[in-house]
Amino acid sequence: MAAAAQRGESARRAYAWIRRGIVAGELAPGSMLSENDLAGALGMSRTPVRTALGRLQDDGWVTIYPQRGALVRELTATEIRESAEVRHAMEVAGVLRASTERLAALHGPALENLDEQAAALGAGDFARFNELSLAFHRLFVRLSGNGTMLELYDRVQDRQLLSNAARAQGIVAAAEDVLAQHRRLQARAWASDWIGFAEALNNHHSIGAAIPAEGC
Image (cartoon, rainbow, N blue to C red; front, side):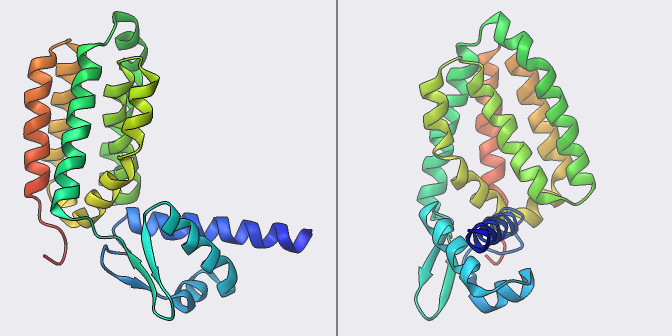
C-alpha cells in the first residue's frame, strides 16, 4: 500500500510539473515530450510519468504517440477564435446580469487579482500570470450568479491557457498594455456598463489574437 501511495504521489507531482511547464510556455505547443527526459528532470522512474501523461491526454493537454512520446497540443486558429467567442458571450452576460450584491462581494477579489497579475509579470512568472488572468476573466461570469453558465465557461478555460502559453513571450513584452486592458475591463464591469465592457472585451481579444504565437 505504501508503494502504491508513493507511486500515486509521484504521478500527481509529475502531472502538476508538466502541466505547469505547458501553462508557462516552457513546454511549447507542438513540442514532443520524452518520457525518459521528463523522468530524468523529475528524478523519478518512467512509470509515474507515463501515468501523468495519460491523465494529461485525457484532459486535452497532450496527444500520446506510442514509441515516440507525447505531443503538446497546439490549438488551431478556429479553436482559438471559437473559444474567444464563447468566453466573450458569457463574460458580457455575466456583467449584464450582475447584481449590486455580487458586484460588492467580488470587487475586492478583482482588485487583488489585478495586483497579483502585475506582481507575477514583474517577477517573470508567466505561469502564475496565466492562471491569474483566467481567474480574473472568470470573475465576470461569476457576477451572473449562474452556476450552469460558470460550469460551461470552465470547459473552455484550458483552451485559453494553451492559447496564452503559445504567446507567452509576446504577452510578457506587452505586459503593461495587457494589464491596462484588464483594468479597463474591471472599471467597465463595476460601473455596470455592460455595453462599454463588451466593446473593451472585444478590443482585448482582438489585441490578444494579434500577438503572434512563438515559433510562427
